[in-house]
Each structure stands twice: as C-alpha cells, then as structure tokens.
Image (cartoon, rainbow, N blue to C red; front, side, top):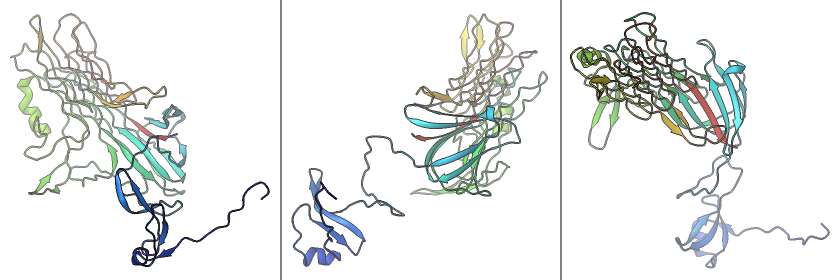
Length: 414
C-alpha cells in the first residue's frame, strides 16, 4: 500500500512448556511464545505487583475466554445483546435510555397475559423482579399494613430464542382489600421471568425450591396462610440440616397482640415464620407486631418491606396508641429515566387510633399509609412498585388499601 511501511507477517516460536523453558533462550522480559500444551500465546512478564513469569495473552473470538485473578473494570462492560419485545399491552411496557443503561420496564396488564422477549444476539443483562404487594387488613385487631412484594435482582445470560422457545415476563397484581368489614383481602400475585435456562418456580404447598428461578414472590396480608416449599437439604462445614422456604415476599403487619396466637398459627411463627423450621424470608422482611393493651390499643403494625421490617404498633402520643410504619423497600441507584434511585417493595403502614392526623406512613418504595379513624383514610400501595396497602379501621370506607402491582426491569449498559 503506497505511503505505508510494509511489515511482513512472522511466526512466533512455538512448542511445549518444557521446550519453552529448556530449548529456547527466552529469558528477556517481553519475549512471546505460543504454547502448544495450553494453546495460549504467552508473554514473559513482570510488573510491580507480579513477579517474573510466563502469562497468557487474551485472544478474542473464542467460545470461552479464561481470565484468572481479580478483574478491574474502570468503565461499564457493554452487552452485545439484541432483543425484540412483544409487550402484553402497549400501556404495560416502556423503554428508555439514561446516562448508564438501556432499560426495559414491564408492568402489569392482566392476569392472563405475559410479555415476550425474543433474542437475536445473546448477551448478559441485569434484572429486577418485584411481586405484587399485599393488601392492608381492614380491622385493626386482625391485621395492619400489607407486606411489600418480594424483590430479587441479579445478572443472567440470555441466549438466542426461536418461535417456540423464548423468554416470558409475568408481572403480578397487588392484593385487593376486603369487600366487607371483617372480610379477607385477595392474595397478590408473584412476578417472574421464564425461558431457556431459567426454571419455573411453582408455589403449591410442598413444591421444590428452585434457587436459579427468577421468581419474585407476592407480598402477603396479615390474614394470609403462608405456603412452604418441600424439604430442602443444606450442608455446611459442620452439619446437614433441612429447611422449608416460605413462598412469600414480605408479610403483613400484625393486629392487636391479643390475636397474636392466631396469627402465629397461620404464619408458622412470628419471627422465624417456620413453625419449628429453620428458615425465613428470602426476598423481604416480616411485618411488625401489635401491642397488647386490652381493647384500648386500637392500632396495628406496619407491613414488612423488601429492605426492612415493618414497625411494631407501639408508639403512644397523648394517651393514644399508633400503628407502625411500613418497612422500607429496596433501593436501586441510577435506574430511573433521569438517573434517579428507584425504591421498590415498601410495606404498608398500620392503622392508628383516633388522634389528630398522626397517621403511619407506608415504607419508601410504594407502601400505602394506614388509616386514622375519622381523620385520615388509608391509601393503596403504588402501582409498579409492589408496595403494600395501608392498614384499615373497622368501618367502611376505611377497609384497608390495595397492594400495588409488581414490576420487572431488564437493563444493561448502553
């Protein structure tokens, strides 16, 4: 080529490890050698952190690239993934690009529809899944704020799909408050991602626990009976023991402490949720406890959140007892369209006695506020956050707040 110096190609010295060390006079830092034992190109290298030794040069365009030692990345690793989204409904899906990520946000549409993801170029993605939030219970002596939907997050490799083998995203709806005084709220619904290499997590009593599933469990209300997995054996360095995982995100706040025994029997234990089983919640935190003060402690506890437990109903102001605040949700930095932090899975606030406007707020992350009789109505959990509904009182229309619908995010460095 005119104007450019022509440098002919050359062949590296090659051979086995023994030949490299014994037959060639390769003793100078910077020598390069092709090792036929390992099929790697090597360089004789030394630096202030590493002694003189032969080290591999990374070769691109291989099925597998091996990197040993700590990997320091001073910028985002971009994913080559190319995907096409078929949303359950146009109103239930949005995508945006902020300063850090390309984000796909999947929202609730209906109980019968799912979003579809088709991948033409595979790659790694980050994911966040949030189950629907539990509803608040309407009578303060039976329960309080709803538990926030379970929150799971991580990184997963998505492979190429075809017409019959693709990824699906299901977003769960929040629980609905009771239709009558003393009634039972409806259960929320879990959210999940399924497809090639991602197993399905069933929620029937005694189902197998699937640790590699992307399945965000629903939040519960305080009157809900928890369902547990089949026995799972876990080995440690000293023993082997059996656990039963509860299929729930965060649990609802308790009502009056005089009803605690009833709730313990339903959930399997206030603090451990296990009825003698050695496990607890994995995607959220428990709701708070009620306070026993005869029939004058007309308040209920806050629901648990994905980032912390619900507050006990034990605050007292001016002779009146107040419900607990909802537990906080889980924070995700730089996720919003304007790089803001998004909080998901907050618990609902408990209800309070009639005293001014001292109501108990829901946890950050979409939790609804609890009712204060004749002064402050409950609020529902916020849609697309999995927030728990606020606790209600004992009369209509303050029957507790609905749980907020869940949400699923899939995102990767732009």
